[in-house]
Length: 318
Image (cartoon, rainbow, N blue to C red; front, top):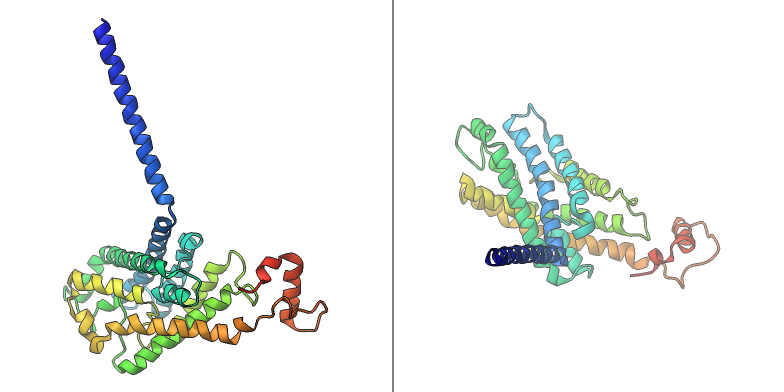
């Protein structure tokens, strides 16, 4: 009887030991997830995925429906609202850049460490790639019905444009490069303005809607030439997916090897737009010494005086 009792105690001890090990393992996993880099990577991947599923899904619906289930405005709305939802998904954790041009520009202007750049880019590529696969799976039957099983990049039954951007037949590489530089410059210029607490920023809590409206505005005004990629990772991830999924290497050769333009031009445009805003507005914000206690009739002075009374920290120069 004692021997049997001893075995039971040993079994209980082993079970307790397993439970303790399991608890420790869970704690290690939780601590790992709570690390800044992991949290940022997961949030950025999710934000990009959300944006791209809505954006690419709107394109797929318009293309495969032959215009019955939407039009060009539907695509702009899909991407604009998709950006807004992406900001909601991870904005407080990673900032929800969802765009390598935004991340690169933040590094250039000193608002993000260069060490974080690869992490953001990989997360954005992963989110875009997975989103392309998700939309392809969702619309698989519709795509094959529309193109009759022939996956092409150009032509009346082309479907590669659902996932990546391609230039219009009339567009030269030079004009397309300028198109992407200007579009991304406007994006970063306005993003800098929306985030500038000493100017006229987006209202607290309304940042996702403001950023989404900005993307919608760029789409309806600068989108016809090449689909307004203005985002290297948004374009490259789905393009690689289409090359693997059946469209082949033609996705890189099409449009006179257009693929590199949405990668390089947005980086140039993003930095250009940010520095234009800094040189035109941000660098000339009044310092504490420049402020006058009396009201001089200028709207900027009114805002600064209100900040001085309410929250001085937000008015201090960077």
